[in-house]
Length: 211
Image (tube, rainbow, N blue to C red; front, side, top):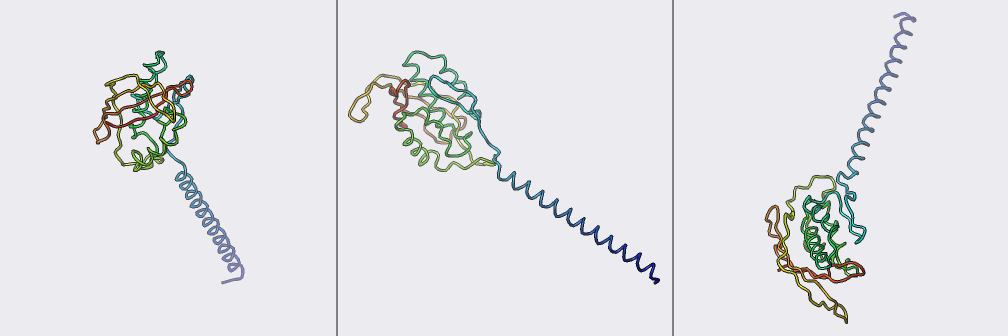
């Protein structure tokens, strides 16, 4: 092979080498980009919530992932003025929120605590985490397969006025007994007694028991 042809071949080999390196860099960059995209999406939760409705008078809020039934009953509270009827409606909202677990993103979404007596909210939250919500699986990525309850209806069985002892004093109280129905019967409580007392300007749940 002549010197001229040899130089031409060397240039071709050199260009092929450069081209190969560029292709390898391009492939590596593409792989890193795809990997980064996958990891970014993996770390971003799919399920998020925002406030759908609120009642400023009581400081209550409702998330957009709540059931249609809960949203309807929440809106009802806005139109109630009579104290006894307010107590009954708050008791219903508390029970609907507490036992409608299927839409909750994770077990820490104990939004029913907003209806609880201010000094006892942490106690209520911990009780729920240790019992009813203890085995609720996380659904941040919308991949939960677990069957969880959803309240379809709450009926007032009985409502009465009574006294409730707190520390060294007795407070006027409303005692509301509620029947609970579910979209699917999964063995959750079907009857509950809810006791409410004045908590500042609000009527708040101070005690509840399955019956």
